Picture (cartoon, rainbow, N blue to C red):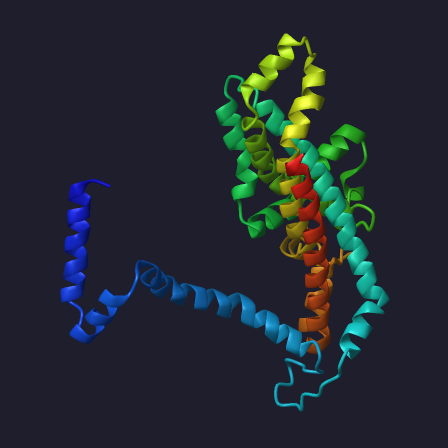
Length: 322
């Protein structure tokens, strides 16, 4: 900062002090820079705490009660761990957790493999790579509502382009290609959409990891006459692994909470084939109106995600320290 910048800043500070009532101005002059900084950011911190922390504690409280949101005037009774016991012993909830695990596993696997492959190709900096990078990033920029309605139209068996493409390649009649109505195909229909939308996100993180690898390491490997295959497995993958694991962590947390795409495409159907944990939670809370039990379910999901994420972060830190 130059001397003139200091002068303008001092003048602005003096002008602010002169415009401030004298009792307040004396107090401001006695405050340190750190105290003034806290004074400015305190409202934001309080707002964030109110938005994020209060609902969590409120949900914890409700999980120990028989509260029902559609009966706000009813007497609220403490049921202890009854809601948690019912949640952990409910076979339908365990089935939804299994469905969620299926989605998380396949979406992460496909997004990581395809995303890293695209990042590796773009990192070669071929002619027109900037254009293709921008084109690949488009799905990630779209609203989930737009993506869900767009793919729902594509999956239509009579007029959808997806059914016509599959029919052209396989010869199967379009009327038999029920991607959203078939119990075997519906889960994969959602996996395809989520992979199409969020693979660019994984690609960006992997591309950042590849661009962070110093060129002199590859030059030293070429001096040692290491093949491209050996360089890929001995240099590229190990050094980009922390970024790959970071992408897996972010997508794993988000896919565990998957709701909007499933709700738009299938609503949990056909039957309960695609009823992930978030859909089951929504039905328990806003269709059965079992607010206390659904709050317990939400806390169980939070603890599960938080615990698994902490274990994964410890593994990620070990990889970074190698």
